[in-house]
Length: 159
Image: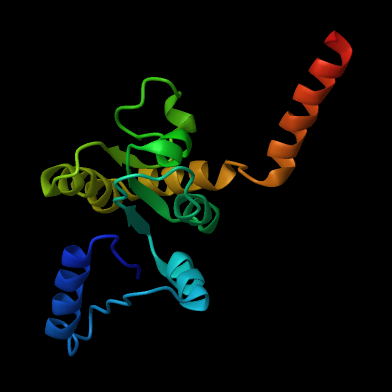
């Protein structure tokens, strides 16, 4: 489900949608439907977010809460919230929650997907642990609100 920012890419997806229209294993929803989005999150094991730019990103945050492992391009808010299971040097292994790729080519995306799918099939207990680690993250306003209060208190008491 989704749409591309480029008309050329969107056209290619429409072509694929018509080509795969009768396939019982694939459905492409080009556009957005909130109810369907929640069903996809709830039923998926992984979600791919190949954004060229993403100042914040809700897709990966919602996916984490649903127990869906995000596979994201390392940009903006995606990089601030998804920590690569295999390569992240800034977070302990028990704090990693997904997969990150950096280039915009299909090889980078496929590499990240192969790592995620490989873990899913070859080490299902480790994949389940990754799911649990992602669900433990709290990116709610409760946490952010407390941080804002801390900043305001720091300013108030310092000045």
